[in-house]
Image 1 (cartoon, rainbow, N blue to C red):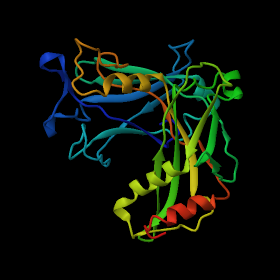
Image 2 (cartoon, rainbow, N blue to C red; image 1 turned 120 degrees about the vertical axis):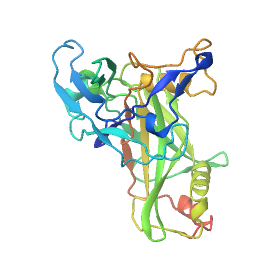
Image 3 (cartoon, rainbow, N blue to C red; image 1 turned 90 degrees about the vertical axis):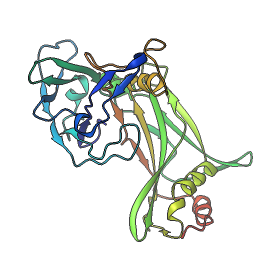
Image 4 (cartoon, rainbow, N blue to C red; image 1 turned 180 degrees about the vertical axis):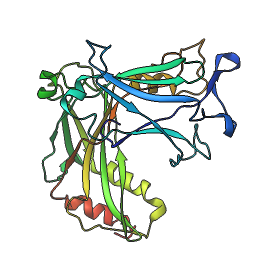
Length: 302
């Protein structure tokens, strides 16, 4: 996530199992390389001068990260992290290509991958006042954004994202402590490589309320309003082509290499190194009373 303060890498041992399935080590002591076995770092350079390194990022081993149960769950989930705050957001950084390198200290063999950052894009609607317009029996709020703003294109500040996803963040209190939940909506695939292409998404208020109902079901009776004016924030998240290709090709049960190659952009390995943006947002100065009433009718404590 290029807008986050810290960049994380997960490095896991894998192998080619029977039937050409990609499998990962299962035993706790053999899932991850020990920190003394590998060097993990990232370099940046301009695409037209790949031999001149502009910046180097060193990743440190850490075990403080906790991951929910899932395909890659482990009781201890070590990761490599590097604080990148302010180092990926300025103009020259957005022009560069990034190469992550994992080097085996014993053999000196390297596994590596490259990616570019995503350029800035602008949310153009709705306005500062949240309002769902009654239309054909529904309450609709139109959300629009450009795939890349003109300044980013003119100065070659990052590439155009491949996929965008609008998300509404709702702030509330659970047992008196402020927190939030994200309601995800459908994705939009970008087919243009130039700026000026506008996306439009009609958000149905009923879908938003149902999303809040589902996400907060286990906290029913423990919820309350925060009292803040901007109880909602509209985010438009995005990812680049590499991450899109990975998701549509790799996240399938029983994917066999001999049948359909699993997507990877890692050289001498398998995996994904890509860019995404999760912090481009639009803040409201006034909430829609219809929405607040509908949330109150859930009887969750609001």
